[in-house]
Image (cartoon, rainbow, N blue to C red; front, side):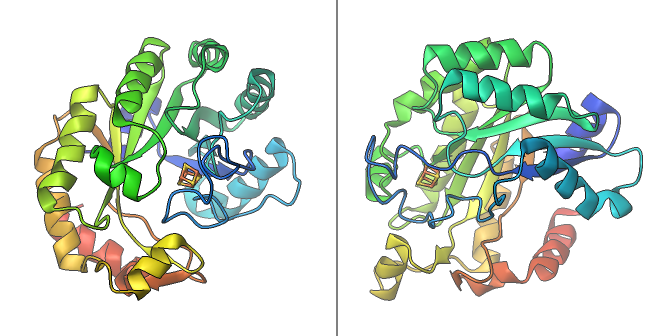
Length: 289
Ligand code: SF4
């Protein structure tokens, strides 16, 4: 399997670290434009769970680098990661200015922008194309599932066909597309989960991030979980699915993440995801990383 580290080494000739940036403050699935309340698993922090406290993009990058610099060493490269909420849900000029500022930071070698497939109108695509010509640009799309019935259940508020179209347009614009997929969504069978992976591959994704569904306090998912409407996946069960999913990936598709971990202060289940070190050891043992 092609890991993100191996991919970065091949592209940038060095180890790369992410400098997370809080840029977007909202999402059309929260403010009523597409939906209200957001995706049922998403907490009020909008899948970023941090606040920049009004700091500039440059200051946020400096702060993020200073946290890992000692471990990373002087040769490390950094990716400015526009992580929270929906980062193309703004005026194109605002996005252009933010990307320009991040790209002009001397330690930043690439940009990564998390967004939704339904937030890529033509003026935004022009900004993406323009920037991708100058700086390696990753765009992360939250697909989560390719099953439109599950997508309705989780209140994703866009059809899977829109994701397919977004992948095509982003690749034409020169972006490298990373797709987020969640395993363990309520009511989904293993077959549906693996179908989502095959779907992303067929759509042309360049990379993939797997996450185990976790339940956070204050979300609609918490209510469903408390009412016993579904069960979260166990560690072994989750990584059995991940192993099968890896088997579906062509060798050139980069695996950017094998699982995620929710914010500890909000996490209700599954608690194995809170043991970050234990999970890393398990992954290293099981996948020989
Ligand atoms: S699209 Fe992203 S930020 Fe918006 S509600 Fe869904 S997970 Fe949260």
